[in-house]
Amino acid sequence: MKKYRFEAILFVVDAICMILELIASRVISPYFGNSNVVWTSVIGIILLSGSIGNYFGGIIADKDYTDKKLKVILFLSAIYVFIIPLIQEYVLIGITNITSNIKIGAILATIMLFFIPSVLMGLITPIIVKLKLESLTTAGKVSGKINAIATIGGISGTFLGGFFLIPNFGSVQLLFGLAIVLLVLIPLVDFKLKSKSTLFITIMIIISIIFMNFFIVENNKNGEAVLNGNTNKYVSYDTQYGRVLIYNGKRDNKNVRILNIDSGYESATYTDENEINELVFEYTKYYDLMFKSSNEIQNTLLIGGAGYSYPKYYISHYENKNMDVVEIDGEITELAKKYFYLDKLIKDYNLEENKRLNLITEDGRTYLNNNTKKYDAILNDAFSGSSPAKTLTTMEAAQNIKKSLNENGIYLTNVISSLEGENSKF
Image 1 (cartoon, rainbow, N blue to C red):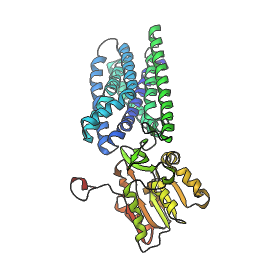
Image 2: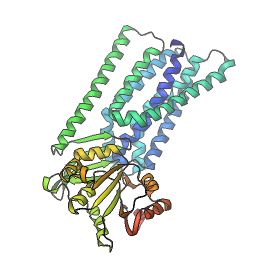
Image 3: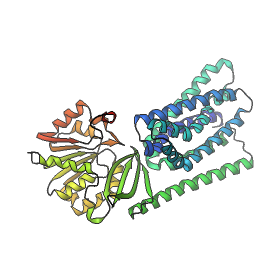
Image 4: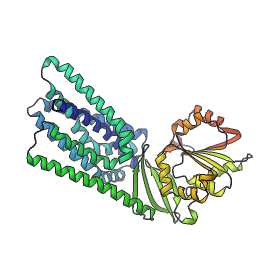
């Protein structure tokens, strides 16, 4: 292990860098969305910070005591990653108070929260190249090997973070976990730590674990508070597809619960028992236009379930009519059952037996590509934040929608847009 300790450190650090990039988009999304603008800002700033780190890391590497400096860099990286979840809300709220421009806001947020740790971790690659370099005759081989390990580490972090860590642990808790990993790497540098250093690192790890568990417990408490109608709390979840916030509020002097995904209002429900199946947002009422057609609407497909507001209304108001709902994110469906009364609808209308409501976890475009069923109406409410799902706006998608409709079938889609002017651009 000692022989390959620097390679192991580099692999893990570059994996952490890519996980941080994924976390950055999740942290920023509730305030600035998850659009191409945000991703461009995150990727651009983190690439810039990594380049700056590489440059100054090369200068540091040419000086003495590089192994000692590597310990300091790992420690400082851990400290700053630890700080991010503690300051993120204050920083993001402050930026939204300064500017409403999404591009400027996303860039500022990425710089203030993720620039420094990315620079610090960027210092590490050239330092490790210097530590591994035994002779100028092997410089090319060593450099190539180190860069290959760094790249593989980054790839591993991307898949591990995106597919497993963020959806299962959440971005806030994961930041504390990454801080712990960085602290654990410090003894690997030379396996020599003074007793005071060991004690300090141990204390920092314990503090990180305490904070990690505190945020988990606090989020669970907030979830119960939201279920009990508290309007001062929100509960957050990281799913495979986005950052979810759920909270209570008022609309037209009525109690409502809102589902926010990547800064977009995806769904809402009234929380008073006699109104939980009624529609909160005005636009959803326009889906009823399908019943004004000459066709008898019996079987309907809705693409985009979110909080299942219209399916609840449809099932409770139109007896004996059926609906299939395609929702890409199965975790969102589970949250709808818990917070948006979908479980109550299933129970009250005996839907598990009569199958009037069919819940399908799949990408809407993929479902249409493979679908052989015919519908009297297809409704599209698939969004990523405030942006429509682009895969459902193409000519091929329209052709598949037509194939999935009965003769004279109806297609209705929700588009957030003005009729003219700058905001009329799709």
